[in-house]
Length: 177
Image (cartoon, rainbow, N blue to C red; front, side, top):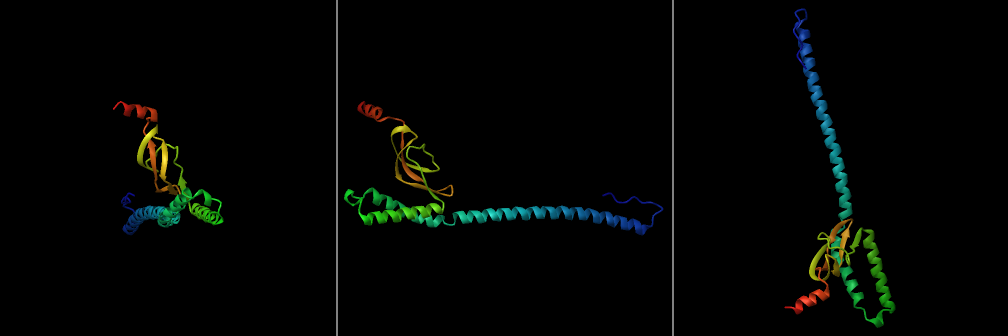
């Protein structure tokens, strides 16, 4: 604000008081602006803290789940190599029920298997270990399943990907060598 103009008819004390009022008004505006910014900063901090708390809740189990992934792998390998004569054994059915319950509980915690076989390779979700004859960029084989936790890749799938050559074309190119 502009300082009050000197009026020859005004008392100097009134002029001084008007000057102080103008200065105090300017300071009040500055403090009001500062308080508004502080309130906005506080609101932003609250929002950030709530987001961090939500993320912590979602991903607090991440390290534990990473340690449990090999258990899922062991169950899968055991069932893949199960002898035919034992498939209908009650004990094996009991172990299969335990594995299904275990998988269901992990799913409830947000763990999800990455569906890879036949899909296009995605370097964020797949680790390509080898390339072979087949449709280019398509996953031909899954060596180790990948998993996501609440949409975040916990472990990429280890896969074999097609190189764009079909088996016949590859054999012909090797025959000409």
